[in-house]
Amino acid sequence: MPAHAGLSRTRRFAFRLLALAVLALPLAAFAAAGPAAQSASAVPNAITLGASARSDRFVVEAQRTDVAQRTLTKAERAWTALAPHFEILPDGPVVVVVVEDSKEYERIQPAPMTRGFATFGGRQVYLLGDQVDQEVVTHELVHIFMGYNVAPDLRIPDWFNEGLAQYASGARRSSLGFLYWGETTEIVPLSTLDTVDALKGPLRELATIEGLAVVQFLVASYGEPALWELTTRLGHADSFNQALLDTYGRTDIQLNQQWMTYAESSYGLLSPGGIRVLGALSLTFLLMLATAVWFVRRTIMLVKPGTEPSLTLAEIAAAESFQEHGQEHGHEQEAEHDPDRDPVALTPIDTSRSQP
Image 1 (cartoon, helix red, strand yellow):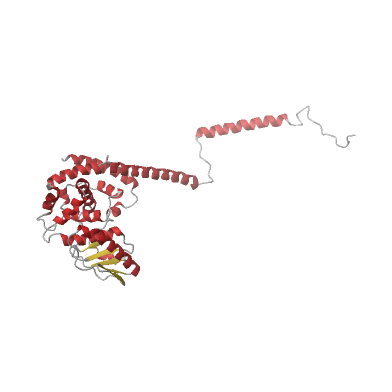
Image 2 (cartoon, one colour):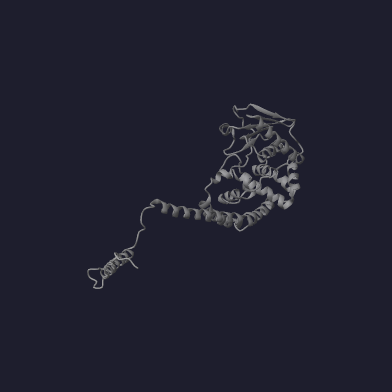
């Protein structure tokens, strides 16, 4: 059994204890919220459109003019940022279709819970919603550019395709993404990650989540220029592993050993990131617990506001005894002040005579 397996199980167990207590939000929705990559075979049916915005590089179609114009601005910004890193650029305008109707988008998306998809090797991008952000536009444009810069017969793993798009778009690992990762099977080696399909399968989210983490590992270990050198080599390499070896001087086995060591130190339970997540979850749990206690106590007090508090048998006996003694003491005081029994009772004052 690999040494990291025990640590992974410990991390998963600890995360589950806290996650079950504090995850009121649906975790899977956050885990799968990132943009997804995408098959060139996805051909949409009819989409409600009515406005467009154009430039030399893009044609943006949307339902409303303001949405089309805002998306065009983001697309131009993404092109400017990405173009210096790729040798070959699209030979015609990229068509960006903004599907503002969520039901229409659900009908055409290649995988559930995506925000966009692109035709790898083509010039079409489909985006969800009327509030498209810069990250998803840049992410999908990376897929377009990659399709032009990878050799026709070269297969690249989905984790690199997605991880590079996530990294280039400025996405960074979130606390919820980290927690979701801890809830999955374990940190998988690169040989296993190579087989993960980003569009289907129980581990498809790993192509995005762990793919970004591996790309960040490569940048942290070898620098960002080497990452873009790798993308250039993919245009003429015999295989993806050969491009890795030519770029980093490490075989896939050596890189995997480095990656697993990096992953345990960066994403383990006692790593800085793990401690931050556990601390945040613990604080959230305590706040939720305090709120629940306050709510329960307030509810109990408001259920029957007119009822008297319940007493124990001993308290009831003591109260009855006190009442009896009080009554006897009251009779004694009444007897002492009775005019019929008191020989020295006061006589009425004669007020008929006035004082001189």
